[in-house]
Amino acid sequence: MTTTRRDALGMATTAGVAAVSVTACGGGADDGGSGSTQSVRVPVTDVPQGGGLIRDDVVITQPTDGEFKAFDARCPHQGCAVGEVTASAIVCPCHGSEFDPASGAMTQGPATEGLAARTATVEGDEIVVS
Ligand code: FES
Image 1 (cartoon, rainbow, N blue to C red):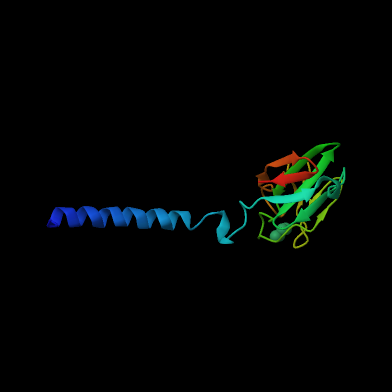
Image 2: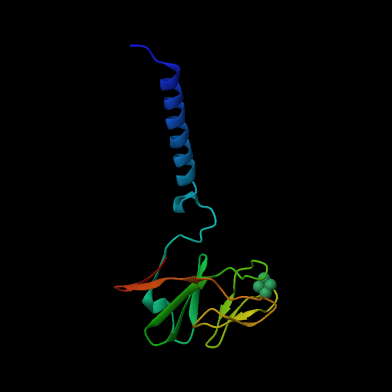
């Protein structure tokens, strides 16, 4: 059996596609990169009503009884991690921006936009943020 030039090109093209696919998969959730897509699990009891919890790269709040919300903890102003959750605000310690604990919307600048929403789901005794 002989390999023609056309066969060789076909194999090279297939190998190129495989390499691209591997590269594309390399940026997935297990790469330790930005972490914005990593899921986080916390006990339900760690997130007080009218307050919240900052864990890893997320902030989890419970604005009303049994309603959990989650947002990226990275402030959209210059990227600091938010540092405090009160009944009325998620506060960034760097320049004082504040965000609504129920919606993540910016309520005080200098940030000009709100926190990015994440999905919070209650599974048994835990809140899973994805
Ligand atoms: S980085 Fe949050 S207010 Fe500036």
